[in-house]
Image 1 (tube, rainbow, N blue to C red):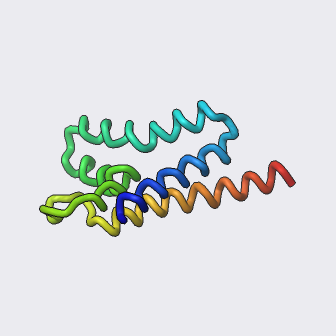
Image 2 (cartoon, rainbow, N blue to C red):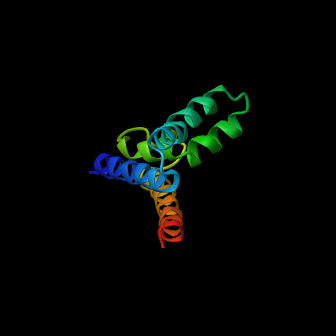
Amino acid sequence: MGSVLCLMLVTLLGLALATLLRDTSGAITLGLGILYIVPVLANTLASSTWQHRLERWAPMPAGLSIQATKNLERLAIGPWPGLGVLAAYAAGLLAAGAVLLRARDA
């Protein structure tokens, strides 16, 4: 169930980016950048403190923590709080997309 919720939130995040940008290639590029490039860059940091912070607050690693079933203490963020981080990103971008859509198409 958690994996389905994670995928639904990623879909809503993509919808929000498409609404904000109104450009398919731009929304895909930005979405993949937010979801995948930030965690890759976090692994290249020398500071373990900043690595831990990015793993906690980047949407994809936090959201994917919902799939963990063992060794939960080794995660940067718990499963449900991690899904909450992803939900906050999706909700924030959806709200911004709704405001921008109303302003442009009113």
